[in-house]
Every structure is written in C-alpha cells, then in structure tokens.
Length: 342
Image 1: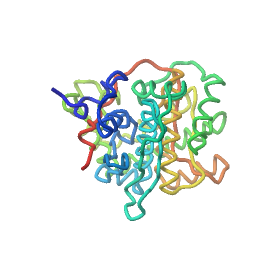
Image 2: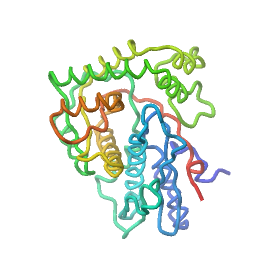
Image 3: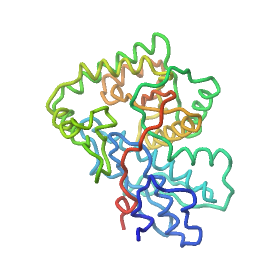
C-alpha cells in the first residue's frame, strides 16, 4: 500500500486530505501541491523539512544550473513558486499561512519557514487558485489566435503586485525589440558548448521512471528521435534555428510580459517566484496558459539592455508569454518522499 508521500504528486485530489491525521502528516500532504511548481529546466531545486515549527523550505544546490544561472537567481525563483503553492494549500485546508523568509542568517539556503496560523475558511479566491495548481502546465506550443481580454490582464497585473512584484505587458515596437533580444540570447547561449551540455543534461527521453527535467515530447521531439535528443542538443549549435523560433513565439503571443521586482537580492528573487506563481495560477483559472522566454534575463549584458528598454530602475526577472491553448500532459515530478529531509 502506497503512503501519501510516495504517491505521484499529480494524482493528488482535495478528497485525499488526511483530516484526521497528525499535524506532521497533514503538512507532508500539503507538500504534494508545493512540488507541482514550475522551475527552470524542471530541475525542482527544493528540499523540505517538517519540524515542530512548521515546514522549512531549503534551496537544493545540487540541482543548480551553473552555466545558465550562475548566481542561483532562477533557482530561488523556482523555490519561491513552490513556496506560494504551499501557502495556497495551507489556506485551502483551513488555516492562515505564516511565512518567515530567511529565518536563520547562519543558514542562507533555508529560504523560508511556513507554519499554520489560525483556522480560517478558504476564500473563493484561494479555492480558485488552489484548483488551478493541478491544471497548470508550461505551454510550449503556439497559442490560439485569441486576445487576452482587459479583465484578464488586469487580474494578472494585480496578482503580480499582490506578491511584491510587477508585470509589464510588452507591445508595439517594444515587443519587436524584446523578441529580437530573445533571439540574440538564444544565439549566444547555444554557441557556448557548456550551455548546450547543461541543457542536454536535463532533457529526458521516454517517460518511464522520469521524475524531473524536460521530457523530449515537451520540446516537440518525436518519439522515435527522443533517445537522441540529449546527444543532438549537446553536440549541435542550434542557436540560429532556436532563436528564430523563439523570436516568432514572442511576436505571436497574445500576451508577452516581463515580471520583475524593485530589487535584485535573494529576498527579491523569492518574492519574484511567489509573484510569478500567483500570476500563473490566476491566468490558469481564466483559461490562460504560459511559457517562458527567459534567455535575455540569463545573459547579464542582455538583461541590462532589457532593463533599459523597459525604462525603469527595477529588475526584470522573468519573461513570460501567455494565451489560450489546448490541454497538455503534466511534466514529471519527484515525490514528496524524495524531497523531504530529516
């Protein structure tokens, strides 16, 4: 008989909540929602510890991306997204959430401590966000040719601000400039053999036994070629082809936007992850899928140019494209058992 912790996280349902179990068991159950958060290359760079004080969220540096993310900025953003999913789950199941960021200066990789506060009935907004968790996917195909309506856009802007970030839609000539920046970043990154090897190391062929990384099918690689995907990606400089494809995706997206924060410290990255997570769930609840074009933010010189293009002193953290799309299968996740530490 499987335990809650060893069950596929995507199979969780509201009816599975162990209402009569001990508090530690209930907290472990809530982590089944946290691990569904997005992260760069689906590296899932988080660890959790359940203690008498609550749930500790730790950065897992063994899952860092030293070439594309040398400062660990996107790693912390991914952890911030998992933190927000966890907070929503705490609220869904009857408690206010208490969050203490960086609770121990002596342990910088302890990013947050989450505990349950007073009992409280989940609001309609919390229920809406919670039910979007299992439906959210990173959407890599082209979107339908449907505009993102003004009410939906307003909801996304508010969602970003609610978690301490900002969301700037990119349109007109500025969109062309940002799309060109995406293409340039692709060409620069793919020209670096170390980048290609790092990316190839996270591409997964097949589905059996896969628990992390980017499935070949998610990149549009046919099943017959899937076993060769990592080898080809590592060996070939596909920057020109990838750059052109991503440029067209940026230009065609119903909504292209930059998410950012006022500062650029680890605490800001953690807020960026929570802000991004809220935007993604708010969008999913309105039928909007999302994908990322973060390449310019991963190249310091191009990030500086993007910041200048936006005309503000704040820091761009994520580039996201959004629109309506079809249903997709989920990407793999490690079980709660695999991300828990004692």
